[in-house]
Amino acid sequence: MAAFPVFAAVMAIAALFSFINDRWIKLPTTIGVMVLALAVSVPLTVANALGLPLGGWAESVAERLQFRDTLLNVVLAFLLFSGSLEVDLDALWGERLIVGVLATVGVVVSTAIVTAVTVLIGRAVGLPIGIGAAALFGALISPTDPIAVLAMLRSTGAPKRLQVQIAGESLFNDGVGVVLFFVLAGVAGGRTSGAAEVALLLAREVIGGIALGLLFGWLTYRLLRTVDNYQVEVFLTVALAMGVYALASALGSSGPLAVVVAGLLIGNTGRARAMSAHTIEHLDTFWELIDEFLNVGLFTVLGFEVLIIPFGWRVLAAGALAVPTVLLARWLSVGGTLVALSRKSFPPRAVRILTWGGLRGGLAVALALAVAPALPARSLLLAMTYMVVVFSIIVQGLTFRRLLPPAA
Image 1 (cartoon, helix red, strand yellow):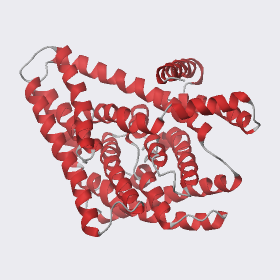
Image 2 (tube, one colour):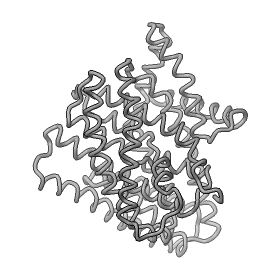
Image 3 (cartoon, rainbow, N blue to C red):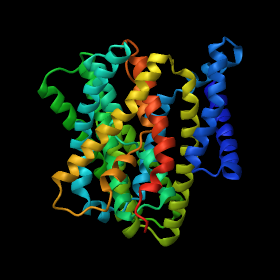
Image 4 (tube, rainbow, N blue to C red):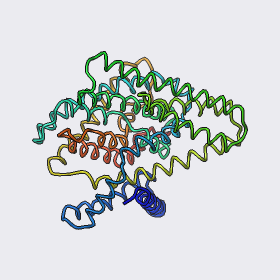
C-alpha cells in the first residue's frame, strides 16, 4: 500500500474520531481521538492474535505509517515551532533557573533512576535487560513530551507561572532528551567511545542547535521587518521551521533545540517588532490550525501503534512496573530541583503538579522505535514505553486539572 493512501485514510479516520469526540464523548480532542483509536485497535489486536486476516492487514498498515521517521523528521519541527510561538519569553526568562535545571540535570537524574530500576524490573519478570538497554529506556522516557504537555495545558487553565514552567521545560528537555538518547545509542552501538568524544558530541548537538536557531530566527526576523504581507510572512515562518530543523539535523546539531529557539524569537521579538496586528492574527490562526491538524493525526496514529507491539504477560508486567518507576523518577528529580531552589517561592503543590503534569507522548514511542533492531530487548522497551505513554496521556492528562489550586 502506497504512502499517500495510508496517510489519507489515517487523516480521514482522525477527522471522524475528532467529530465523534466533539459530538458525544467531550474529552480533550487529542485524548479523545487516542482513546477511540485504542478502542478500535484492541479488537484488531485480538483478531491478529487469532490469525484472522483483518488483524494482519491492520498490522501491515500500522507498519507502513512509518511513525518514527514521520514524527522525528517532519511533524516534530512544526509542532515544536507552533508550541514555542505561544510561550512568553519574558515569563520564561523569569523561570529560567527551574526550567534550565529540570531540562538538563532533571533529565539526567531521572534517566539514571529509571536505568537502575529498569534492570531490576527485567530480573523480576524474567526478561533480563542489560544496562545499555535500560539506559536507552531511561533516556527516551525521562523527558516530558512537549506535544502532549502543550495539548494538555490548553484545556486545563493552569496558573500562568505553572504553564510557563511546564511548557518551557517540555520544549527544552525534549531537545536535551533526544540528544542524550542518541549519544547513549551511539555508545551502546560502539559508534561513540570515551568521555571526550561524548562531551564533544553533546556540545555540538546542544550549542550548535541553539546557535542555528538564534541565527536563522534573527535572519527571518530581519526579513519580516521589511514586508507587510501576511501571506509572505506566514510562509517565511513555515520555511524557518522546516529549514532550521533540517539544517541542524544535517549538520549534526539538535533540530528540536534549533526550532524551539527560532520559534521563541519569532513569537516574541518578531511578533512585537516585525508584524502588524493583521499579520499576527493570520499567523496565530495558521499555526493553531497546523497544530490541531497534526496533533489529531498524531494521537490517532499513536492509538493504532498498539497493533505493532508484541505483548505477553511478562511484557505487560514489566510495563505495569515501568509506570510507577517513571513517576517516581520524575517526582524525585522535580522534588530535588525545588529543594535545591528553595530560596524561590513556588505555587502550592508544585512538586505534585509538575510531576503529574510531565506527560510522555509520541516522541518517546518514536525514540523507542529508533532503538536498533539488533538489540535483544528492543521489543520489550517498545512495549514498556507504549504502556507508560498510554497511562500518561489518558490517566495523567484527564486528572491533571484536579491537582490545580482552586483559584486556577
